[in-house]
Image (cartoon, rainbow, N blue to C red; front, side, top):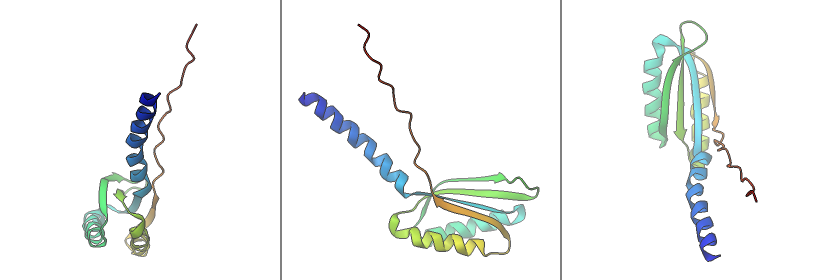
Length: 121
């Protein structure tokens, strides 16, 4: 019995850090013209650095409209820095060379729960 409780505790502790990471994970998607994307990326990362935000994943892909690209950034944004993150995204959306900005918290990735099959007799 004691072994089961200890195993449950270890499983709980192993799952807890990933939940905390998902709570602080945010995303930022910016659609702009292709010639502007490099300068925008540099400006964005300097601004994120000054705010104390750290990017965990960055991708640049072609947008659905010809001549445009989408800069997608996944970043760690603690609760204390969410207001600064929102203000940064609003400033980006007001820039004339940017067509669209989407941002927010990332949904936690749900893991498939294993099924427990009844033992056959």
